[in-house]
Image (cartoon, rainbow, N blue to C red; front, top):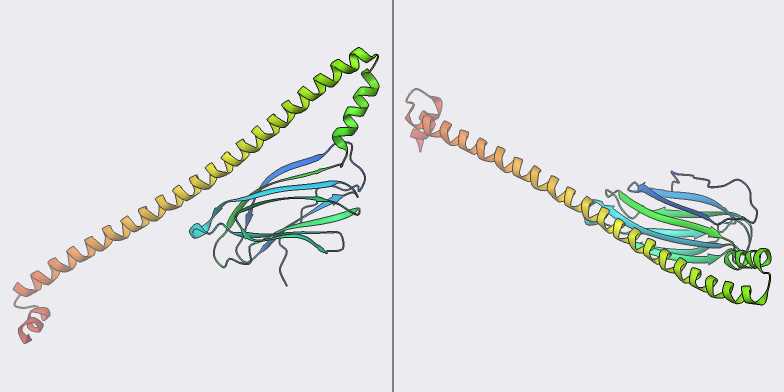
Length: 226
C-alpha cells in the first residue's frame, strides 16, 4: 500500500462556485513516496490539470499521476511521464483526489510544477448572458456588443495562450538551471577528488624514492630483498 505523505484540502464547501478556482504550485516528490491533493468539486464542473517535472536526480524526470473520484474510482492515469495534461467533467459532487506517484524512484527526488483549475461548465456563457442582461438596451448596442465581445474573447484566448507559453518556458528554464547546477557540482566534486589523488600519489612517490636511498630504513631492507 502506498504511503500518502501530503494531504492538501483546497476548499471546504461543496457547491457551485461563482468564480473558477485556479491554483499553481511547485512541490517536491520524495523517492518512494506519493504526494496527494484533495479538491472539492461539484457535479458538472470541469477539472483541468497541467503538470511538468522540472527537475529530477540523475536525469530521471518521470513521474506517475492519477485522478480519482470521491469513491476513489480511478478516472485518469499517466504512467512514467515528465509532463501531462487532462480535462475531466465531474459527474458527482465530492472530494476528488489527485496524486503524484514517485514510488517508481528509489533515490531520485522530483520537483513537479502543476496548475489546477476547477470551473463551472457554462461559466463563460453565464458571464456573457449576465452582461447582456445588464447592458443590452437596443438592437444597435447588441450588434456593437457582439463584435466587442468576440474581440474580447479572442484577446482572452491569446492572453491565455501567452501565459501558458510563459509558464512552459519558465518550467523548462527551471529544469535546465537545475541540471546545470547538478553538473557543476558533479564536476567540482570530481575535480577535488582528482586533485587530492594527485597530491597523495606525489607524496607517496617522494616517500618511496627517499626510502630507496635511506640505508637505515625498514623499506630499504625490503627493497634489497628484490
